[in-house]
Structures are given as C-alpha cells and as structure tokens.
Length: 373
Image 1 (spheres, helix red, strand yellow):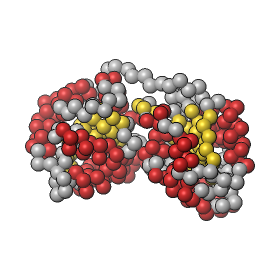
Image 2 (tube, helix red, strand yellow):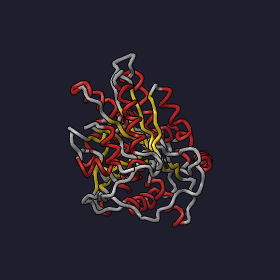
Image 3 (cartoon, one colour):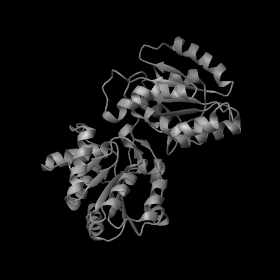
Image 4 (cartoon, one colour):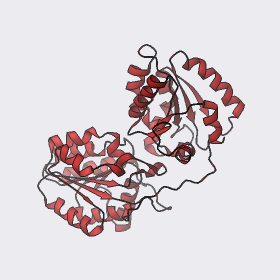
C-alpha cells in the first residue's frame, strides 16, 4: 500500500515518533512532506517522549495525533499509555503506528525475536485496539478499520496499526546527509587501534556490526567486545556497571547520538559516579542512520557542555582523525572519566554484515574475558 493512502485514511495532521526501518516509507514521506515541523512532524528522543508530546498536542488542539515507532519502543510507552493516556486517567486518544520487527515466522535479528512475539499482546494488554497491516491489506479494508477506530478514539482510548515488513511503500527517494567528513567505520578502527585489548561496550545498530567486522578483518578475538544489539540508549549504563566492578581496567563505550538522546539521564548518572577507568565515545552524525538516516536533534547540541554539566571531568569534541587519535591516546592514559564526541558523516558500506556469533555466545565470551582482568 502507498504510504500516502495510509496517511490519508488516518486523517491526522500531526505525527511524532522515533524512526524505524520497517516504517521507512512513512518516515521518508513525513520528511519529504513536512521535514521537521513543530506543527506537523517532530522526531522525539524516545517513544515515551513522543507519546507525551502527542498528549500535549491533543490537550492544545482537541485533535487526534499519531505516534510512530518500532515495536522495540513499546516498553518506553507503557508508562505514559497506562498512567497518562488511559481512559481511566485523562482519556487522551492517540493512533500508534508500530513497525513489527521479529514477527513470528519472519527471519530477524536476535534482539527482535521475543519483542516480535509479544508485540500485539503488549498493545492489547494496554487496552490498545490493534489491526495488523500487511502487503495484502486493501485500502477499503483499512478505511473500514479506521472508521471502527474513530469510534474507539472518541471514547478516549488508543488504537494501533501494526505494520508488517514490506506493507508500505513510498516512491520518492529521500537522501540524508551532513557535511562531516569522518566515516564511522574508520572512527571505530581508530578506537580499536588505541584501546587494544581493553573491553569495549558498543551501542546498537551499525556501530556494533562494524566493530564485529573490524575484529574479523584484524584477526582479533571478539571476546573484547559486548555488542549491545538491542536496548537502545543503555550501552553507557552497561559500560558503567562493568567499569565500577573492574576498577583497574580501562572500559570503553562506543555510543551514538540517537542512543544518547534516547536515555540522556544515563549521562547524569555516569557523571555523578565518574568512574576513573571509563571512556565514553559518542559518534555523532545527527541521524538515526541504522533505521534509514532520519535526523536527530543532536546536530545542534553542545555535547561537551552537556557532559561537563553532568559531571564528566573531561569532555572534548573532534572532527578529524589527527585530533581523534590524540584524544583517544590521552583518554586511555587518563585517570578520569572522559567523553569524546566525534563528528561523523552519514553512511555505511552496503555490504556491511552482521555478527556471526549469537548474542549468548557474545555475552559468555565477554564475561570469560572480564574474569581474566
């Protein structure tokens, strides 16, 4: 189904969400049509954030907003759905559009498998009336469902369209880019060269995939790395937990701007604890690149000032490899928590692979290595 038809049938003029590869057609359409526009389309830091933003829109306009997200974000909406939107509380109607990663019977990555199994059940448990949209769904069928949904929304309840893989398409090609010159995979190569055998916790998405392939190309063991294949926004907290309990070992966290934004409070906790043996590298391309390249708000943020305000004793931003190497070396030798923001381009190799070890194998190998330290 053309995404334009879905938008027409829903009939809302305000969308907010967190980009998802399964919903790339919708995200591209919104960016192509509105860009980032406070009146019509806003990309939020996390799914709870956009649910609350949608609630504010409804309070101010009386109209029904749309929140879009990957199903991995259902956990982030549980609290605002149950304690803010629910008809036993404020009865705020919202249409959710949820990309169904890990749908049973469809091959997907390990972090999506269980989430895929419980996607519809979680929505229904939150009293959200749900309809699954697939390639075979007709416009007439969707229109009839939306008419039913309007009656539900009128009672202050929520509804959801769960989108199967390939169910939506958009004919226009949208290109996302920035003016930064450094390529993320090369940045990670430089981190690996300086960190040597120090443990690394890497964030979800392409950064972990690139780290895995760099180890392969170098003929190195994967035991040094914990690849956070899911749990977006939590890598730095995982690294903090490791650093506190391995105080004599330098621990590195390779993070991304979208992940940092998703759970920014973790920086405050990191700064408050300030482990002397941790380096927090934030690769900032101002984009949700792994799911398509849609923008984050990180392009206009002063990450260094944020880190210092959170209590990091040292923070710096670099945009070239000479400065990156100097700062990585300084951080490795420093006896304090360090943050290095690296300004990065948008883009990755088209033939970028995925880890060939299982998530469980990754965990066990990493834990065995930590025992040696």
